[in-house]
Figure 1 (cartoon, rainbow over the protein chains, first blue to last red):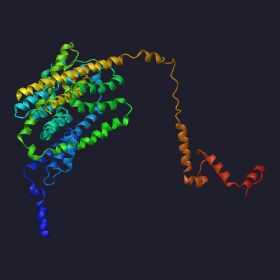
Figure 2 (figure 1 turned 45 degrees about the vertical axis):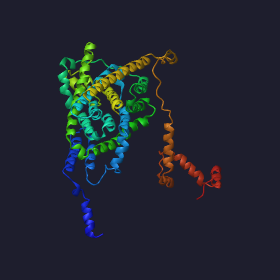
Figure 3 (figure 1 turned 180 degrees about the vertical axis):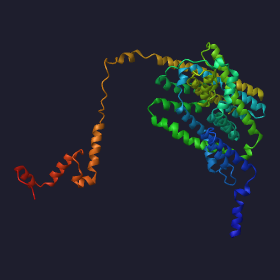
Figure 4 (figure 1 turned 90 degrees about the horizontal axis):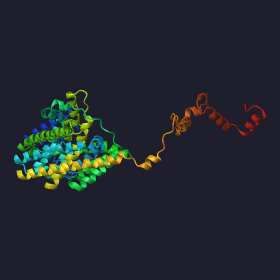
Length: 373
Length: 122
């Protein structure tokens, strides 16, 4: 081989020779996600690796997301198989204190009402021309639960994984901006000022029995949701048992952190220019926002109903925390409650529906998978 | 297809509500179990003794461990072991070490002379 031939061959293999207009646009989108993560602190744990994965996958010639590429391998074994979201759910379970829900179990219903956005946006997606499986994957954004969105989408409409994951995590970061106007619109200042009774203590026995009972209930009623609920409750049992501190700490830190890195990069890697730069992505972003808004509204309206039925003992604001987005949504409730009444502390009351929203969205996901999977 | 989506919505919301309603019931049941301590457990646990609680005694072997650590540290200090002049009287174990070394260095006749009141080797 002559020097000229080698130079020509090498030159023909550079990224510059294979690059179109789409790749730089996708790099810019990846850069924007990294900027939002670093500068604006928008879900940085996820958006940063997603942004970088987006840049990596749109590098021409490298073929990292082609069969045999390392991103492809992680994608197949971690996301397509559904393992990564399940591992994340175990970590979430180990991090979650279900005490507020156990102390005031009627708030579980708020976690159900706040799944309304999932199904309303499913209807909207169908109306906009998506098929049922795609519509269900888009709708699940309204559950405000990243791993659940990824789990459902990887099974029903894998080609939409990138925009749906971006939409889910972006709107979760925007909860403090999306929710307050809806809260003020749907509740009166008097309702927002309602102070709630202090929560009772929850014993260790209850905390240990809860995950076991929930898994059995899930297995009986919605078995298709058992992988998600099962891992969530396994993580929680490890936390509450008090005898496997090492496992609990591993689930809360090493496991969830490690999986988050690979999950983020691989989800970013699904953002290929040819599939991401379409009108469908824009529709998904709009529908995702609508899903969040309807979920918030569903929780608030049910909260108002509970307020009325309880004779004004339930502050309807806590219904807004029924969308998962733990603990951001509960914090927003606390802030809005204090704006109406400085002496009002709703955080722990809002944590009940908040953690139940995780269960509710997993159950809704199970229903969608059972019907459409 | 919109009709199908509507059915999915009704079924989905219905099952989600049913599940969480049942979960509410389960939590209530578990809570009931929790609030009623068993009579045998109540009888088995004696009432706390009157008066102030006994002072906490730290007899968990820590003083012994500390003493052993000091002894080992001193024993492994080659500078001090080679030059007894460095050993101060206040150092723990000094007397014990000097006595031990003296016994090792002294031959049997020196020990016998010392016992008889004579001087040692010059």
